[in-house]
Image (cartoon, rainbow, N blue to C red; front, side, top):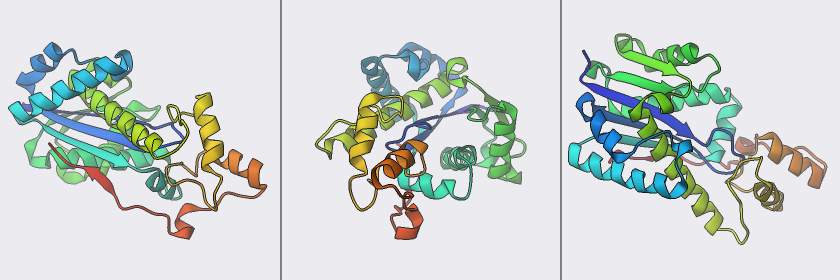
Length: 244
């Protein structure tokens, strides 16, 4: 029986501004009770203040108990370039599998819980296992929708991913002289920001150029197709935040 459990979740799949953040958290099974005492829950159920407080508590406990945390920040530029070759689901499969490898190895034989990003939750789990490779075939991988509500380790990972994503949005906003909102296309403040973030020779680096929202704003303003990011050398290196 596995002694350790890994939970993985993401934040920022849908926004038009900023990165997609994936977090993998590995703890001993015996430490589930610690997460419960911290008040861990699905990040979407927590207020911003409560989420940030629990986030810091998780980091504190990780130092004390030697938990492994890996945060994978996939920038807007990397999302755009990736989507030229694959779907957003395939991109997330790559990010999830990479994050698993950063906190574990096949021989640890951990129990792995995924918050499924595919409409077919079983297919997502199989795809992540396939991406990990044959050495991982004996590991238990459980992929379910709303796993952040079902499993405390995934809930903790969702909190970390969400807080890091919020910090990235704050960082981006602080570099501009106007508000960018949440970064989601449903946010009117974000829509106004997108219209300003295209007013240069190229769209802003923190915009997802491959998103319909950005394309429509660009075409409306310039009456021509939006540039393709990798054709103008606007790539960034892989940006990974390390294990604590």
